[in-house]
Length: 431
Image (tube, rainbow, N blue to C red):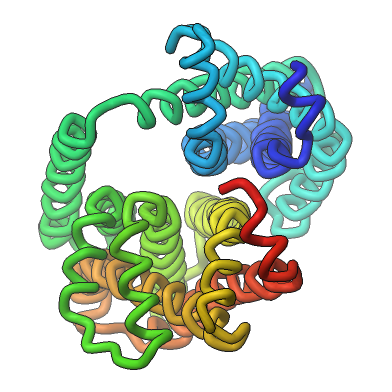
């Protein structure tokens, strides 16, 4: 608790992740409370319960990954502090309990602060369902025990587990970590490939047709994201960049591949999930409209779920990227100062940072696009007899624009802020 009180700014990223995670989980958890109210008809109850269950599952994973990404950066930047504690007599178990305790305290504060926004969010979400005709107008919103318990039950264990994982990453050997990661990546890639190929076993009008390619694209993106570090190294080995900024950018990326893996993972997942889900839904909606059929209640629910899930993913990934990029760039104050004292101009430093993150953005977008196409193409072939849907180009450009704006914008703005510190004073800052 003394660590949190003395340096609250260090935990702002974790607090923001926990706050948003608890807000999302409790917002959709309130739909369970609403569905359990007396007098709710069966159709409205099924719509509310299904939406809350599906998004609740996604929310659990997103909360864990968002908190884990911020805590991993936090723990890595505290390596010197944690090593000093060990030299002073603290055991690894004591350090682990300290970091976990910090994370749980911050997550508890974030969950408490999210109660008010969750009530408002639940009411707004119910109004959307009612406007679409999926829930009866007579249903009133309820925020009760299920919503409150879901926020604490998911956010606090996620924070504790992510903190424990972040501490273990700093103590485990690289060989053990890479071996486990490669195994999980191989399993995800095999599952994704099997799911996308299985799409051809369904008919064009099968209600479950969209599930397999969407699951396949997500699994493939997870597999590629887990292989982010070796894939980035392969990209860097083939880059023919010249000039001071380009040469230094490649060198910096090679030295910091492990630290940047989380950013690249977020880019891959964001590009793949957003592109695949939105494109599949657009192809399905256009196919139904072209056939003259009327969307069923289940089809409307699925469309709402897809848009909602993508929206949540966009928000969380943007938060993860902003937090990770800000922390990683702000931590390079001493490095930037040394470069300026060695003769680099502020423009050259900014050029190096921009080139680094441009390489990261392009690599993440390409890998995410490959995973998305693996699900889009089979679905389009079965559903429309085409190969690549015309809707994909516009959706992909929008996704890439968001990814590039978040990545490049955050890194460059943070670097400019860091460069305001005089070079001599920046070198004096502890690394």
